Amino acid sequence: MGRGKIEIKKIENINSRQVTFSKRRAGLLKKAKELSVLCDAEVGVIIFSSTGKLYEFSSSSMEHTLTRYGRGLDSELPSLHRSAEFTIPVVFTFEQESQPEVASLKEEVAKLQKGYLRMMGKELDGLSFKELQHLEHLLSEGILSVKDKKEQVLLEQLKKSRMHEQRAMMENETLRKQVNP
Image (cartoon, rainbow, N blue to C red; front, side):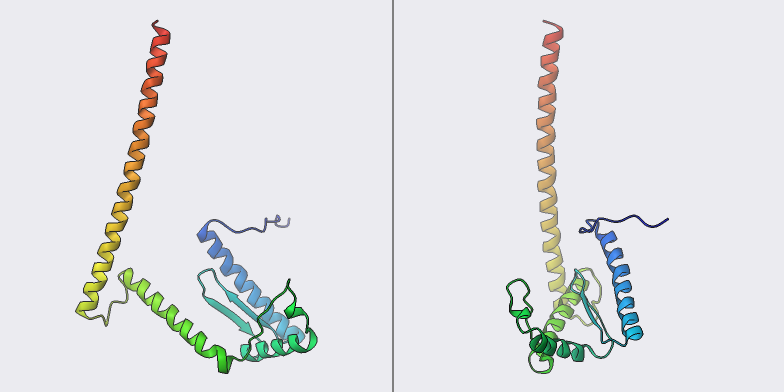
């Protein structure tokens, strides 16, 4: 008995989405490798996860594959990358233009990841006393903001509960008057 068809739509549950992403990514990369070996094809696959993490496979080098792809667009399909329906920015000069930008973005991602880990209380080695105090201050402000928001939510819930209680008391009084006129 075969598997049932699944509806292709965004998976709302984050954990299920991540598991599905990992399995399907692995399957896609495996198929790309098989295609490359079986058919002696030059294959390149680039995947960015929803968190921005890069996964890639290339049968030769990714730079070579992308350069070849860019040349192919220019020579074989001159109107395709200019059409309104299908626009691909053709920038394949990695060594000259993109490498500094890629390096800068990787550096920024690394800083953000390090900052996140530090906010979680990890990777604190190497921080000076002053930096630790600053981090503690930021965390304290964050905790205060969370507590304020929690208090607001609780007050809203209390207000709604009181309104519900008043409605119930009024309905109860109305029913009592109907039973005992």
